[in-house]
Image 1 (cartoon, rainbow over the protein chains, first blue to last red):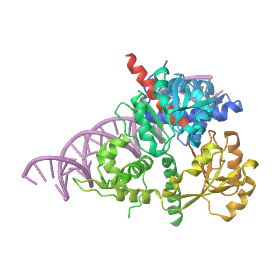
Image 2: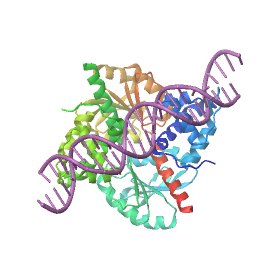
Image 3: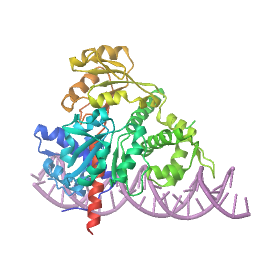
Image 4: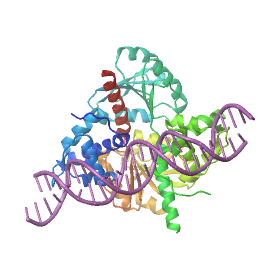
Length: 215
Length: 215
DNA sequence: TAGATTGTTAATCGATTAACAATC
DNA sequence: TAGATTGTTAATCGATTAACAATC
């Protein structure tokens, strides 16, 4: 049972292997995959993939490759997909309801247990099979449920206030989809999901290509 | 005018600086920021921030800091935010309309010029002020408009087929939000926006913390 | 002047790749 | 056996950090 700490670079690649195998190979019925194929998918060197497999404790067979199910299992174990983590979501706009409705989180062990909104007109309606709750219920809810992660899909101007409320109620992990930074105490983890990071990479690619073609 | 190529690591940090300054400092009226403050925001060493500023050609003032407007301008120039890039979006579900309605892309120079959907019942309705067009119009549209980027927010099972269609019409950059991998020719750039990457990091954090507390 | 902050060079560190041995 | 692929050690490369000089 390998439980050595793994580096941030590997943590970034593991879900990409996982996703490729899960969404492409498994549905095809492919049982085995080579390091070269996985590496090509991620755009990296195949030696690196073999190192990654070794780091999470997966052994391959020379001339054959790695078993898909073993890779999936190893990634789940190493990243902690089997922890059964409880989450709640605040903000049931388009983005919030898209995320709440995305069934894919279940296999990572994340359960969205409730959705909240500050807009009274939404209270009582359903999102992804969950009744939308008013923010005034938040404190009670957190007292009675084991919630690790709060998913924030509120408008940018509201996010600081709601983060403060959640932190005050004991939440220590925020997954923020609002395009705004949040000030938090040191012991709170915030992951900002910024679309601009992805966009910046595409724009830089375009810019580099245009410069190249001018030469 | 510095136009040296910058490394992937820096490309990842630049939009984060930009975002912090733009959404927090500018609204506050803060004109100047220190490398220490920027570094703390990103959770990195302040020497690295000074290196980054130097890499994009921004000069600071000892004892004062860096001017926010100069940083913003330099990042825009280095990443190519002023290129005026045309985009179209396919898939006007919750996620698609959330993205189409997000006004923040404009300042990066991205214009979403049209939205498409394969669902006939949606044709004619509006998303973010744009009439939803049928996929059958796609070819004509691409012939008559300058489109660099296709944003894919369709259901996972549909994404390969729609990507093939777009590529066939000459699109060479795909920004994929569907949780599925796309097979493409070598000259096509695909950026997969995988929520699972962010989730994996949070789960790994929880797992590490739990192990820590058991010691 | 003292002190705070930037700017840069050199050292370190870690991640990736090259080379090649091991295995089926 | 030959060939393909994994597995690992050593070398390289690049990114980060430490140290300290420069500047206001």
